[in-house]
Length: 567
Image (cartoon, rainbow, N blue to C red; front, side):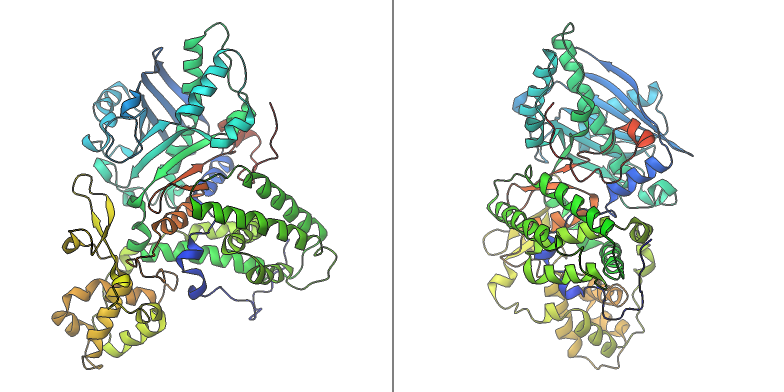
């Protein structure tokens, strides 16, 4: 049991001015508190069987499948519609109209009437409509080269090479996983009180975990169709090494800006977890051995983190160097009689490692103390409605003080410069998806969405200073109603210090992929591979236990890949 001195005032939470910068947020890694880790711990602890209960596929892989997850109180079913897609129609872009497979997560077990209804809608995705019996809507495409390679190997009775699988890490990648009321699905507020969905995005990630099952089942099915006399199933170790890819663009980016109270809970829980570990008073040789083992596995997995994006290649190279330095540093720690040894290691990292290396260390430190950090997962949801009402009785001087305390980064920005106003956020007309425009090069800035928080805070601050400081906020907003959203955010920030990104989100050098990376790290994603500064590919559930292993032999460190084994 870790001995923690919670009154150690010298070790404190990292301040928002350190944590809430895009460069650091864009270097974050998954942790024990990431949502897919939370999901699998629950499925294992509660012994959820997950089974394929329907499989009606023809030789070309066209048909219907159903996967059912049964919990203590409820059952959920993933309904799959598989397609023989014309390669010319395969696209990861949101404008695509057909996919290799489409899915919906049903609350309960669908009957034939449900299947018939869903078959008329789910393959159409945004063009169709599902009902309040459905919790999510998603689609996926094959990673064609790897999918065809695995299919051919299994058909001739051979196993694919592990090294080939590791280069990609998935057979299919999702291009969207919609939930919470979109396209007719049940809104989250109606299921938020269900214990299994108490953490964010649990129903969506349950669907993705079952999509992973389908991705292997369909490649085995097609291999058997190609060569029924020789085809074999995929080795279970290789099956485990495959996750589900995801291709994510700007559509995800505004979420953490539009949900400041919820985002604060994510960041605060992670920072509290780190603080608890840094306050551990002492660690024996066994803990250092555990850390060394996790570090070795992390370094092993880094070998297969590939990207052609120049920025990401640079970050991977820096992380490779950082982990080597960290391994050398740790070799000398087990012989030292240190107080708060992990705090000492973290402080060393701040001086010697890149942001990528520092945040990787945060992940490793949190990993070692489940008894200290796992309980924090219950704090990662938020009742946002509770903080929506504006306090109109607050005085202008009080609001100005809050801005000076929490938004100095906004006040320090000179918005008279073109570079500070270079971009604007808007929604595309065709798909209503968030987009980023170039203000001085493209038309449409008049349709800008209110995501330029820094600029709008500075504007509100200027108008506030023109008024009598003893006036109420209600009186101020009667004259300046355009500042309502900023007044609300500033009042929320008083109790939610990690709610705001301390960067200008319309600056010419802002990287949207940093927003994506941060959010996806909370999902539990790995192997971030930017394809531009506005969209990224990732891997989810790679190396995760298979469904039977959740019940029989769950290993919660599955996300750290094993040393590669040739099969």
